[in-house]
Length: 407
Image 1 (cartoon, helix red, strand yellow):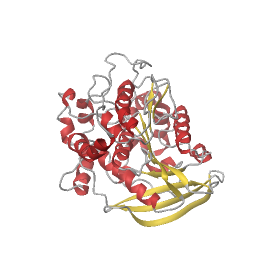
Image 2 (cartoon, rainbow, N blue to C red):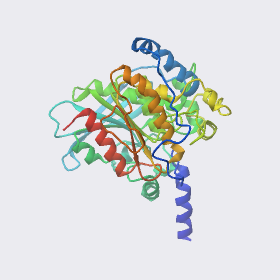
Image 3 (cartoon, one colour):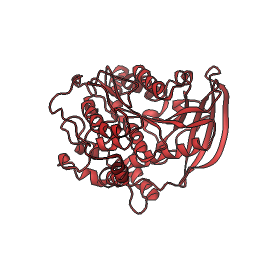
Image 4 (cartoon, rainbow, N blue to C red):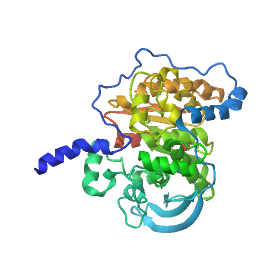
């Protein structure tokens, strides 16, 4: 009886991890297969591009993401020291209580104790909140009631989730990150907009009463509110701030970078449809699938393209181009065809002409397996499916080191 229950639980658990999909799909080819042409953004000069960026951002709001909440700065309600010599003395843990447009969340910050100058920072949105991300510490605030998914409750559930989606799906390798000289800033966006359709719709109306958008736009806005806090503290280097996210959080990190110039680098891992992958493709998660399963993630206008994804007037290479010339790392798994790494590669190719306007080559690799951490747009692939594995963090840190030069 117990064995049967465990097997059923292991099968059901991937469905509980909202926004993540793990499917046994064929290996993605390292070299592009037809149609291989990338969308082009040639034929524009730098001044013309910069003049048109705000209009392009608005088109993404109109057609895909909806409006983000107003840029009202984060208000710090409380700030406390949790532990001065955490992780064997490597880091200092602090916690902020924040008011974001009337809604409370917590920001957990971990600074490397070895730092002698302002440090670069990685802002992370994790699936199960800050307490889980820091090993279940009782002195770290949990998510707001009703804000987290069932797989985040207790160690019994956490074990199969980690088995399926990787060692670091809930908890980043904090000691490794500190050893590389980075601070971490962890925030749980579900406190602001829960990842559940009815609750999200209600909260989005409160945040954007005139024209509520989707949850991804609100989660992207949460990244920016963390930047408000970091930029007000001279211990953090405001020229080296990275936004990191996996799956749905990767979509939000990418959008945050496109909307907020204060974000200096983006790591969008397996962000897929509505993230780094092109919409106008027949591979991977379709517009119909993503908008029917997660109707609260996007503006209603995006679902209107479900029957005609080829007709959508904008695509994700243009969103990537809005980052130019700031660095972007796109992560993928060789058997995660649902996230469509090949379309992400083509989107990166399509954005590269805008990077070249700024003197950058953009994407320099010729295939998905040619990871170049020094390039301003890079793709890093590893074996396996959807999730966050040790090999992913090796790639993330190599990319960060190449661009932020901490040691």
